[in-house]
Structures are given as C-alpha cells and as structure tokens.
Image (tube, rainbow, N blue to C red):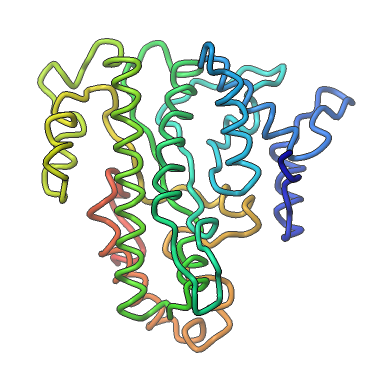
Length: 297
C-alpha cells in the first residue's frame, strides 16, 4: 500500500489548497492531495487501454513520492467537472532531489537509473495528456520536461554549489534527464507511431537535429532518426509553481535553501557565477531554452 503524500512545507499545502484542490461549488472533492494525484492519474491513464490500471498506479505513485509533477493545468482541471484547456506544449517536472540515496551522508549518491526511468514516465504521461487534451489544430507534440530540486540534490550529495564537482554532477543529471526522455519518446514512437500529420517527416529533423551535437550512443542514432513523434522533449525553465508545490524544492539553477544561509547565499556575485557555470553545463542537454536569461545579462 502506498504511503500518503508527505508535506513538509506549509506554503506548499496552501498552494495546493488554493490552486489545485478540486472544489465543485460548495462541495470539497479532493479530500487530500492523494485524491488530487488519483484524479489526475485516472484522467491520463484512461488512454492506456488494457494497461490503464498499471499506469494510473504508476503515475499516482510518482506524484505522491514527489518524483514527478504534472502540468499545473492538469492538476487544476483533469478529472474535474471543468474542461481542461487545450494543452499546447504541456510541461512536467522531475524532482532531482527525490533520487538521492543516503542523502547528507558519506554514502550519498544520485540514482541516475531511477531518475532516467522517471523522465521516461514523464514522456508517456505527457503523451497521454496530448492525446486527451491537445489542441485539434496543432498535431505537433512538443513537451517541456525539466528539473526541479537540482540545487537540493547537489546539497544532499554534499557538494558545494560553487564547486567543480557540483558542475559535473549537474551535467550528469541533465544528461540522465535527456536520455530518459529520449528513451521514453522512442518507446512511444514504437507503440503509437508518428503523430498526426507527421510534420517532422515533411522536411523537419525532429529529435535527430536536437541530438546532432550530443553524445548519442551509436545504437540509438538510427532509431532517433526515424522518430518523428515528438518535436521536443525538454526545457530549462518554467517550473516555479511546481517547485513550490513540491515542498519548496529548489527551482531552476537556484541553490538549496540551506545554501542561501551560508557564505554562498550572502555573496550574490559568487552565487550568480556558480549559477552560470551550472547552467552552461546543463544547457547542451536541454532542447528548449529561454531566449534571454538574467543569468546571461
């Protein structure tokens, strides 16, 4: 039996209650956040046919463990008596902090395998969402799967945010996100084929172009070249609301809350330098990035 979702931040509780808890008139429908998870998971897994029960459970488990957070539009509307707005470029956040084993000890390590698997689940979840709630006038599937909790994960690993080890660890985590999403996309293409209209097949490169300058294992190159289901999978920002819901997880390239109270938090110039370095290490593995950023100013 899955344990109830654990809140540790009262601001996260307030956010859930005010923004994502389903109320219908004077009736309270989501008695707990686990009811919210089940509501969203059920609405998404309805597209899974005979495997509906499995994926409903898989999605709800990932939500409840703070491993994976779905698009805020899904949290607000999926499975309620209100229609889900047409989902253009749906997003999801994978919480890196949830994948550190033996955190804050000498044995602390990042579980790249489980993190990559969660990223693949995020692709499937958004594929289900796009089928169910995507706009009829846009057959493309462009997702925005990103990370929250990166700064928290680095702190749990015992790495100083401004250290070379933290930069290398952040880059490895970003690579695991990208590879996990890629494997998820290939799985969806194998199961469900190219998307409607196959716009990438009509002159575009799809994911192959995005992976052209990345270290792609040779055995995957041919499969990626044939995969025209998704136009993009990952993005670098836009997860602040989901980070706050996940018990105030660190957002984007912010350090952990603990780091804000040490010397790094007090030295804003050093903090910005560290953020630029981590961003530079992560960015090559991310498909969509903002045109401008305060870190680049």
